[in-house]
Length: 153
Image (spheres, rainbow, N blue to C red):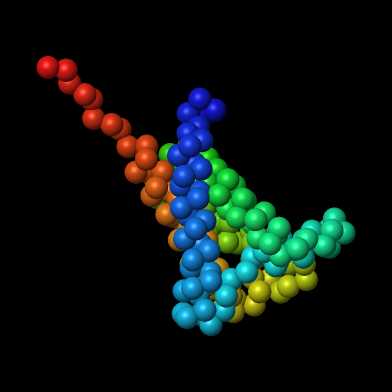
C-alpha cells in the first residue's frame, strides 16, 4: 500500500479540504447555524484534562489543522483503498465517521453531552466534516485521474 500512497495528492487534498473547513467554520456556520465552529477548544480541553498541559489557542488551532490536513486526508485515502469506494464516497463516509468521533466520543471525554445534544453546533459540525472530507475525495479523484498517453509523431 505504501507504494500506492500518493503523499503529495493527500497533502494537497487535505490542505484544500481543511481550508474550506475553516472558511465554513468561521464565515458560513455563524450565518446559517448561529455558531462559530472552534474545534481548537476541544484540542485545548483534551490536552489540559489528559496531559495536564494548557495549550495556547493558536497552538491548539495548528494541531487541529495538522490533524485535518494529514489525518483526514489519510482517512479518506485509506477508506478508498480498503473498500474500493469511489474517492468522493470514501470522503463522505470518512467525514461522517470523523464527525461522529469528534462529537460523539471526544466531546464526551471533556464532559460534554453525547453529540453535544444534537444542537446547532453538532449539526453545523456535520456539514463541516462531511463537506471537508468529500472535497478531499474530489480533489484526490481529480489529481489521480489517468493522464492521456502522449503519442509521438
